[in-house]
Length: 410
Image 1 (tube, helix red, strand yellow):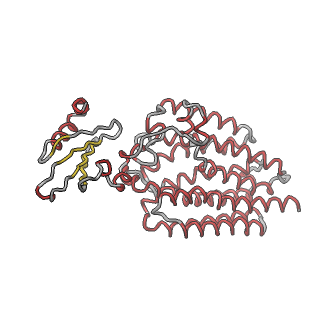
Image 2 (cartoon, one colour; image 1 turned 45 degrees about the vertical axis):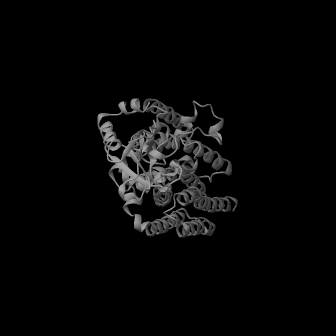
Image 3 (cartoon, one colour; image 1 turned 180 degrees about the vertical axis):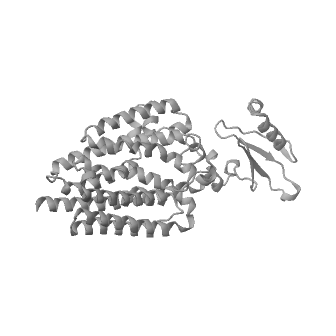
């Protein structure tokens, strides 16, 4: 069995293995895993080891060989030799993929699960982040419409925007995974994504993307015709974001341009022609810029979860560029976001309810998040990424909604 495993290796790997196995003090004992290529050699006590046996692990990679030795005291179980730190730091030693056993994905047909994972159906936070700018612009634009948009109209527009966000976020994830199909296997958090692990073939993902884009177009056609002219250009940004992280340390800015597009869309969706309404255009421009700052802020936190693996894989991010100054940059982004949000309110003629609820609420939630955030903890970064969406986005939406209702009822 071991002999067949050795013969199945490439010539270079086989040569390295044999040199390792038959070197000084080595008694070959082969442990082969089809998914990790981990080899173990038991060694007899060496003269310098004080009769303490040791075990060496040699991991074979396409271009490098890494050798790790761990001494164990007599009687220690052989399977406890690899330290926790090594297991945590080595993607190739992590657990293999297992189908979801809880949640929505667990009740889907097995053939659907990879596609549901591909669009992150079980991780809806990205959909919410894409939807919030649409909601903000709808609520900000409603009092500027002629006549003022009714609550029923606002609710209907909001529902269409959420449907579009769900579909287009899924399309964006699929496009991203197609671009990253050779990078994702090298990052612990993404190594088991459907394309990366081979559960969805690139051609199938491409066809699936086309179907999602057609569904998104069907949603867009439910809006006034002028929304087509504003919505379709955003597809260029959706396709370019995965490329940006290969050529610049500021892919979060490109993501901001993409995810914030909805901050413009609420105005034409309610029948406001931005090209002939300077007040609405200024309000939309400030709101769009505010959401760009917010996107860079929360995605910088998100990027800290993969900062070590990104550095090894050659993936660029603002988190890598400014790792030591992250909190200062987050503070600056928060101030920029709130300031531009206030400017949007001034341009739209908003009242004190907006400034207290939206601007004050956003400032308070961002200050608390930046103060309490532990950038060295993947778990903490994820918690604030997920919950910060609702804290800040919810505060801004609540203030905008209250301001709209005050103006509608007055």
